[in-house]
Image 1 (cartoon, rainbow, N blue to C red):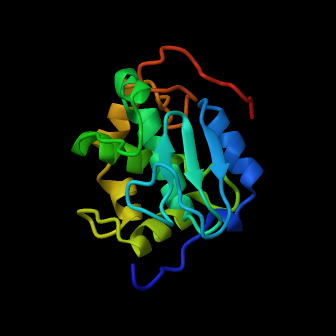
Image 2 (spheres, rainbow, N blue to C red; image 1 turned 30 degrees about the horizontal axis):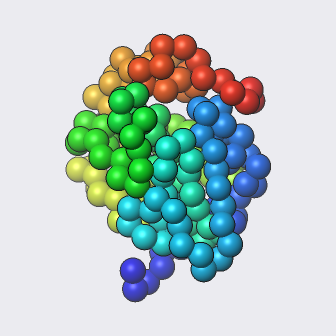
Amino acid sequence: MAATPDVLRIADCRQSAVASLLERYGLHLRVCADGQAISGSYWGPPEAGLVGNEVFARPDTPMHSVLHEACHYLCMTPARRRQLHTDAGGDYEEENCVCYLQLVLAEQLGELGRDRMARDMDSWGYTFRLGSARAWFENDAHTARLQLISWGLLAQDGQPTWRLRGAGSTINVCPA
C-alpha cells in the first residue's frame, strides 16, 4: 500500500481494553513488535492476522482490521473456527455481518466508537452500496442485522450477546 490512510491504530488505543473485549469471546490478542511479521495476516502487514482463537497485530495495525478479523471468528461456523488459519473465508452474507458487527463492537471501545470506525473503514477502502460505512449501517444493513440476531450474536435491541455463532450459550470468559 503506497499511501497509509490516517486511521486509528492499535497503538492509539488502550490495548488492555481491546484485549478484554476480545477475551469476552474467547479470543486472545497478540501484539508483536514494530516491523515484525504478523502471524496469520491474509493481506500482509500491517493487517491483523487470525490463527485459531488468536488475533495477531503490531502497533501499526489498524483497529478496523483487528475488529474485522475478530468478527470473522465470531461469525463463522464452529467447524470453520476449528480449522482457522489465516484465511477466514466466508461468503458475501458473512462479510456483511462481519462489517456490521465490527461497527457495533467499536462502540465498546471508548477511543474508537462507531463514527470513527465508519470513517476509518471508508478511508481504508471498504466499499458500500450507499457510498459510506455509516450510510450502509444506518440505512441498508438490516439484512446483516437480522442475520446476526438469528445467529445469536446480537440481541433484538442490536446489542452484543457475547456469543459466538453456533456456540449456543454465552462465552463470557472475561466479564466487562
